[in-house]
Length: 190
Image (cartoon, rainbow, N blue to C red):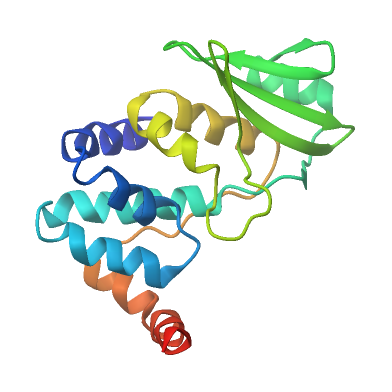
């Protein structure tokens, strides 16, 4: 919880009206080329240390499974481990800041992960999964909340789903990791 919370706290002051869209692309675009372009534009106004945290946050989001996926536990175990409660056909758990993480299942198949806040409901996985890892409307909520992303990670781990994001110490490390994919993507553009 501490690492995610500190990353989000450090990131928030740099997510301004001018940088909001670039951060959304950096954190959520499935295209490494798009993420690299956003990163290159952000380097001009955001400290490198913050951008390293942002690319690591991108890896966290990228590592969360898209729906549907199977979990390694049954529904009863999920409720016991996460503290979720069953409400009709869903399992749900509130966060301290007013969000609600909702899971729909069919046995050990997770049909979807839903984030609710007041009257708003956001499905985790965009349909189809083509240009974004998660529903783009959720990126701002993940940045704003101290609890939402960590709660989702905790639920995914409680499901027995492998969650092992690659983390980087510098932007050079991240660029090196994705150099080949970036060059191939740039080649496809031209």
